Image (tube, rainbow, N blue to C red; front, side, top):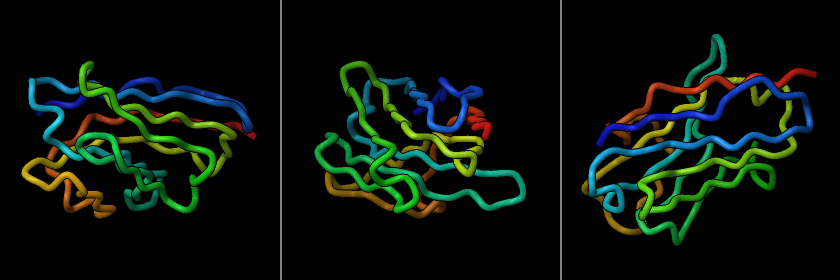
Length: 126
């Protein structure tokens, strides 16, 4: 599967953005998918993950209550709605996918995902 992230940009603190991750191919529903982010000088970190059928999600504590991951398997697209953005949310956001897994798969580990999008930059000004 090939992934294309979009929707990043510059926003003021307290604002909102919606990221999208478009996937190629007809087997999107067989992949667990997630969002990760990497700030300058820091390691890539987990943001959120959603199961193959969208029935279950996990969000990092740092974004819980502000960000919401979702997916539309008919459109082969995953989303990240980001509200109440903070300057510390500034990072390049990557979408990722992992195939060959169970319906309940929700790994938070970067190394468990074998397909990655190119990243989209989110900058939150104070």
